[in-house]
Structure formats: structure tokens, C-alpha cells
Length: 282
Length: 282
Image: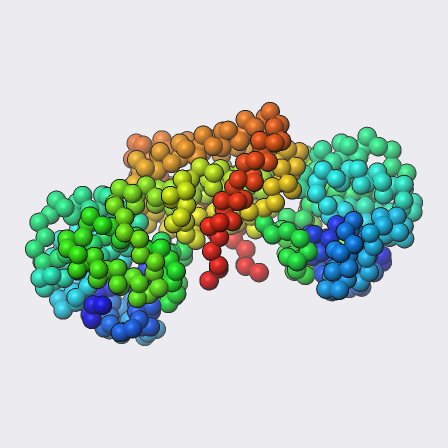
């Protein structure tokens, strides 16, 4: 387990990681890095991080492991900057929701000091900012670690250890497989929720109950974060939208023809599959 | 407020109404009716109802108000049966999720004793059965009461009082308006969730996190209950599916063309609208 960990970005993901690492054994030294002085001050005051800085250079200089917890589109550029500041052999990972585009950009750069290993914890919320941070965010969450991104085995092992130390279930996959999976279970539901909210009339929306609220909860996510996640995975996402649309059109056809047996079979199948993936609420 | 209320059906809706009426002021006498002896026994034992019976005749004979809390397709036939058993002027309501088809059938019958007023509380859960019943299910929930279904003003007022006494916010609407609204905010999200679950590959589903679980929670609803709800409102529902599909196709086109500004506008619009309808969690 790395002894000194730098976390760049003190939002929901970075803040929760800071909180969770306070309980990790052995407990690493954690330094939080943010461009905002007040964020650093507040995160230290709230006990999310033990120490903090607004200087990337002083933050990453002595770190064994750097976690980039900033928006997807900033990751590749940050890796290049860290490479000029960190000591040789520094392991760097991230929490970005799409992986192929980040890796393509990073592979184009010749890194001298940094050993980069991509990660994506399937944890989060429509809430953002470290005010929403919680120590159990990563507990029992699936964390993807990207196999071919690992410069060496030690780097991969260290990143896997980091996530396991905060309760994550690590899955090593290729960037390609990761992006297909993320399109299906994260970005497709997001666009479906967006379309639901934007297609229903305001007269009807006044009466929305629990069901509508559950189905569209993710639509409250930060548009600026999501626009980059979605854009960097758009080929997979368009394919998933098409698959989903075919299913919905099929259901509409069953409805028009009033085929009770077929409709019941679709509902029963969905209930069976959905019940299987139900996880206990935190 | 009616003094003696009979509830037919001791599932989530009927059971929760029984529990809630124990706190209503003035507290009415409540009798629960179910075909299942063990359900009646258990509901009395758990304090959901004060008294119960498996006999429709003895249950409704002396009631001032009868609430039918059984599946949609059973409502119209039950109203006709109750009309032969109840005293003249007995007010009868229901909790069915679609209204036009029930009313059409009931209007075809010549009722002698029953004054029927359709209701639809926008409360519920994917859970079913009185084991899931809770006293606050109707608290702050929107309850539709169907205006033109009311045989007279006193009947409409009594049904509205019933729902208000358990915390519901009563909205009087036409059956036509009700069914359009219910298609948009309840049945469309249901079919969307079904399509999501049934279109995503099992490899991807293994990794589903909170977002996917929220978006598809309603797909765990009872298929037999939902198949009738959906079938009895299929014209409105097909129209809503088409509206939704056009929105999703539009998003897919924006994605293909990588139009960042337009994508951001859609996400921001959805966040704004969705945040407005957010209700405090119970």
C-alpha cells in the first residue's frame, strides 16, 4: 500500500476518497490538492484531508501515488503536467468515467516519471462537491482498473490495493470493454432520464410521484461533467441507444396489437433480471 | 367524514390506507375485506385493520364508504357486485391507475345503490402486499379524484375528505386528463425501465451501480398488476412513447454530430426541470 497519496480535486469523488483513506489500514498520509484555496481550507477543517495545498508541484513531489479526481476532459493534460513534477516511478490513476480517449491521448505523450493506470469507480451520485462526500462511497462499489493502461505490474497492483483499501471490488478490464459497459449501464440510463424529463409536458410533471423521481434521478447530475463523459464515449453510446430504441419500439408494437401474453413476458423478464442486480441500500 | 369505511383488498394500497386511517381524526371504523382468510387474520393481528371479513356482503352492508383496492381489471365488476349488496347511497371509490376504461364499463351498468367516484393516489412502490404497507404512504401524495365520475357532489366531497384525512393532496380532473397524465409520468417511465433492463447485455448488467438501479427500480413492479394498467391506457401510452422516442433520437443525432452546445443545453434543461419536481424523501 502506498504510504503517501496525493488527491487532485476535492469534489465528491476526491473528498470521499480522502474520508475513506482515514479508515484504511495501514493509514496512508493523504494530501489534498485543489486550485481553490477555500476548498483546501474547508476540506482540512472538515477533516476530509489531513493536509492540503493549491500547488500541484508541492502536492505531487513526494507522493507515491497520485489520484486525479477531476473532470474527464482534464485528466490527460494533468498526467503530462504531473510527469514533469513528480519523482520517477510515481504511480498515477484517475476516476474518469470513460477510458479509451484518455488513454489514447496519454499514450501519445512520452512519460518519463509517471506510471499511469486508469481507474473508474462505479460510485457516485447526482450530488457533487465535497459537501456530499462520504466515507462509504466506495464500499462494495465496483472499481474498474484498466489492464493495458498499466505501465507495469507493480503500478497495477498498487492502484488495485488503493481501491480495495476503501472497500472497492476491483475488476481489471480493457479500456474497450470498459467503455462498452459504461455506455450501457451509466451513460445510456443518463440520456434516457434526460429524454424522459424533456419529453413529458409540464402539466403532467406537476404530478410526478416516486416512480418518475426514481427513474429520472440521474438527470440531476452536473451537465458540465456529463457532457464530456458522454462526448468521449459517443460511438458506444449511439450503439446502446439504438439497441434500447429497438426494444422500446418492440414494446410499443406489442401494445398497439394488445398482445397480453407477450407484454407479460417482457415485464416478467425485466422484473427477474432487475431483482437479480438489486443491491442493499447504503 | 364517513364513519364506517370498508376496504376491499389488503395489499400495499389497502393495507396502507387501513394503517393511515387509524391516525385520522375523527377516526372512522374500518373493516378490511379480502378473499384470503389468512390475509384478514394477519392484517388484524398486525393492527392494519380493526376488523376483517372474507365476506363481501357482510363487509359492505353497513359501510358508508367502500374503497376498492384491488387490481385495475377487477374494479368495474366489483362495483356491480357491491351495488347489489350495499345500502342505498353508499359511496364507492377505487385506487386504479387508469380511469377511462373503468368508467366506461361502470357507466354501462345501471347502478341502484352505489355512488361511484374514481380515485387514483399517485403513491406506491415496486413492493406489493400488506407486509410493505405503511401509515405514511399517502402523506403528501397527489390523489386524483375523477370529476365527471361523481354521481353527486356529496359523494365527490366524501371521497376527497377520505384522501385528505390520510395526508393526500386531492386534484379533481377528468378521466381523460388523468389517463394522459398517468401515461406520461407513470406508465411511460415503467416501459422505459423495462426496455433498459431488457436491452442491456448481461455482461454489462453485472456492473450496474446506483444510477442504473435508480433508473430501473420500477421494473421490479408486479408484472400482473402492470400488464392491466398498461393495456387499459395503451392509446395514450403509445403516444407518449412516440414523443419520448423523438427526444431520444434527437439526442442521438446531436451526439453523432458531436454538437457540444446543444448537448449541454439538453442536459441543463433536464437538470433544471428535474430539480423543480424533487420531493423530500420519506
